[in-house]
Image (cartoon, rainbow, N blue to C red; front, side, top):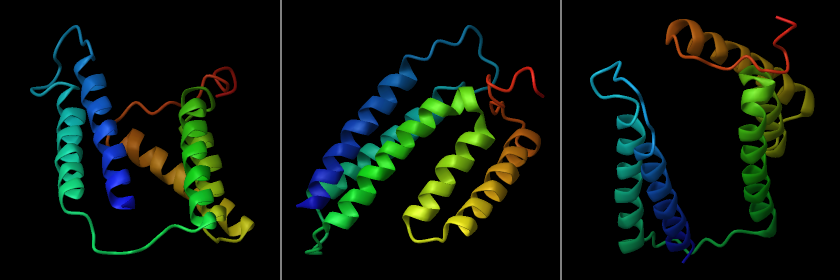
Length: 146
């Protein structure tokens, strides 16, 4: 039963992803596929796998406990906070906060969770910005500082 509920939510999410991607309006095409292709492809793959899960769910009789449901809800709240902080606080700060809380939420000690989140956020920022040459926000709150 939970597989079908999850698959229905993912199917709805895949539709929203494709709809949002098709709404992207780019004045000129700077690469052969354009910025719409990747989210549309991901949305279609997500829709196909969601339909498969709706048709043929797992035979597993697992039911989430209150603790698991609480962690899932906390994860949803954290990802909403991440989306809200991402542009203003910047990639490093937002990823550090959310990564640290996620690590702590799933059993890591607070100090180790913070160290892991700091290393992960700084390394991934430089990999994304330098190696992949993506525009990763450094944060509008820090515009005058750096």
